[in-house]
Amino acid sequence: MFRTKILFIGPCESGKTVLANFLSDTTGNVGGEYRPTQGVRILEFESQAEGSGDNKACEVELWDCSGDFRFESCWPALMKDSSGVVIIFNPDVPSHLKEIETWHSMFISSQSLQDNQYLLIAHHKPGSEVEDGRPPLASHLSRLPVIQSNLEEEPEDVRRAFCRYLGNVVNTMSENREREEMSIIT
Image (cartoon, rainbow, N blue to C red):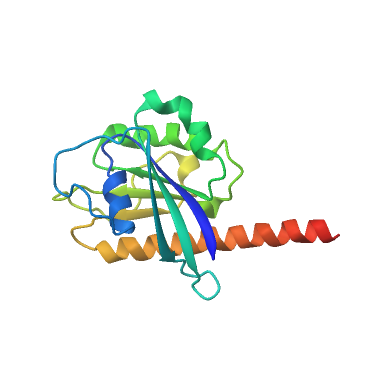
């Protein structure tokens, strides 16, 4: 069984913890007042990685990282051995759209992960209207896939999209492992 380490990063109050709790089937402070994550929370669960051969089960370590820049000195340690990075933002908050570039340069540009190991989630808070299409992002971010997330309207669509993303991550990890084994043999 593959073990993946996925980082959930992004601006404060973007919904990282809500999504992490939902995807891991963790019950938390649902509908309560906002309490910022201090540093990082690590959630462990099993999930089906869709599109990974036989839809392999995979152990997921989901690292729900604080969006507070006072923890910036810890971020290199969080990135170590990560299998994938998910940037979560609220597209209804204009400052979040600008901050995505910072998150991208700090977590994605600095790692040697492949394009299919990254994901953007445009997370809409309850009661907000979800617009179709891509949010207005910088041109160099256009190659990254975007999932529209609204847990009130279509929660299982979000779960399926995350499982497809996990499948991409597992396939990439498998291909990298095979390449490493072949290089040892030859």
